[in-house]
Image (cartoon, rainbow, N blue to C red):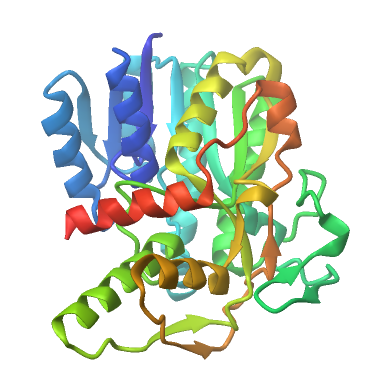
Length: 347
């Protein structure tokens, strides 16, 4: 039991975790069905950087028998379960795919561990969407953001669950199965309810990876300005005052490593994970930063608010700080400049 198995390992968090592990001489097995935009590019990047020192398996976590055989064969030290359907809009369009991937796929992971490798550490990437739209919270509307005054330190793990949208239901079911398999079968599982993650190797789209997506829009507007073209107006959902605490991928990787090192202390636990209040930002505030960085004007139009969207989600990260000595280190400006540089290099 010395290898790491990463499901969804060619996604942006997965490939960054694999990169860090391989750089430290760890045995890594990546499982990915390569369906996500950018996954093949990330696979090629890992191969260029680390050669043949690791194993890649093109497969799908919906294949219960195939995954069970892999776990039985490898008996990994840890599984970082990152594979999943991650877009709210996609879940509404295709709820069956969303359920089969997120809920049933996670059950397949757990059953494989229960039957073949119960000592394996299982780290699950859940979401703040398990708390629903937080419509019961009282908000104050400021010039550039909403403020949840009664939650000045953010929302902790005692926040009431409220599964809304197919995505919220599928991820919420998987979240609860992970915790229950620790209770019932004594598996070494940990659940991370993530806020917004961004960073290198994230091929952002209009419905997933909003920080990278709007950085890309700014770069396109700057290019249009330099070349004498007219930049197109882009559309946002809502009024732009929605707030999230953003977390750079480097800090996520450190979290997963620290969690594994402290598994005997935290197995069966759930953590709200994000950048915390210091790294909270609204869309409007992000646009203001990008306008200064690129000397441009972010011209956008507002559309209706997305179904189930939260006006504010900031994670109270006190529990992770106390139990595993983890806290974010990449601040907003450093993170925005880093991901912008990566986007420019990719272009």
